[in-house]
Amino acid sequence: MQVVSKIDILDQPVCNKTVPDNYNVNSVLQEVEVCLEHAVLKEFRSKQLVTDGLIILDTYMCFSEAVIDTYEIIGDCIVMDFVYEGNTIGAVEDSDYQMKIASGTHSLMYTPGFKVTLPVDQAVNYYTIILSTDLYFKLISHDSCLHKGFELKIRNKKSGYFSEQHGTISPQMKWVINDIRNCKREGCLKRLFLEAKLKELLVLQLEDFKTKNEVDLAESVLRGDDYEKLEEAKVIIEKDYVSPPSLCELARIVSLNEFKLKKGFKELFNTTVHCYVVKLRMEKAQILLNETDYSVREIAYKLGYKNPAYFSTAFKNYHGFVPSENKKKLFMQPLSLLFGLWLLGVSAIRELIVLESIIVS
Image (cartoon, rainbow, N blue to C red; front, side, top):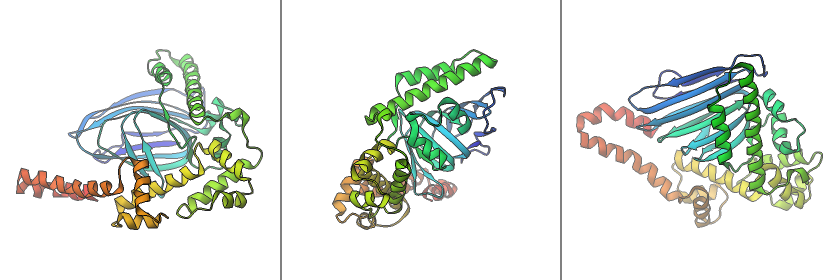
């Protein structure tokens, strides 16, 4: 697997690591620290631990102006992500899906590979552990009841989170991460220590997801091919979230009773059918607001809302602000920059107009 991170203002990638997929206990544990300097960089430091089947990125970066971070993973892997600081939304290439990064949250994701573009205009501090599937299944068995739905995603090579709702980083998680950061052991002892801490961190994540969603995974209502049927239901919703089938219709299509569809969907994806439809609509709404000239009313109708006011309420509940404010922000950003340049004088405008065109685009 390979991990590449590139910031648009820098000539060289800040990370470009390739490791074999198979976890090898005899491979070398390589540790490097990357510190960069640039006019726009207030601070950048990244500690990177690399070995066969594992890449750990411990990164802090702060900029004096907005930049674009393009983050790419090539190959099957599981990503344990802990965001200490920073909030942004990234667009995943060749997909309507958006990746949300929120301060103080953790997530667990499987991906067969993706490329995401993240706008960064503030300090970002994250601790990311990227495991090959080979190493992941050495930490937890294939048939464990703790991750049945997630294991199905991995088996079917379908990208997705363990939980659509990210968890909150706990003090215990921070302690374990600090233990890894401050480990002074070397060689085989350090590897054994690292493996134990990775498993402990995974336990804390699964425990948090289980507690938050109040689902007793050991007493699952799901049996046999129910998992495949629920995955089919999720795909149906993703294909037609503008006018999705009713719960009754969806249950009939996938050959489940309505109770098992509702409870099973919540158990498997950690969200309700209704909330998942809203999530897909709101993420698409954000894209349409940012990238098209459609009015709020037109976007509401395109996403299946008969009443634009109801759409605006749903948008505010999901994003924290009404869609008209989003349009206003996008309109005001280039104007505020041009006004600032005007204050610098005509010569400054000529010199920096190229920067304005890049930001607007």
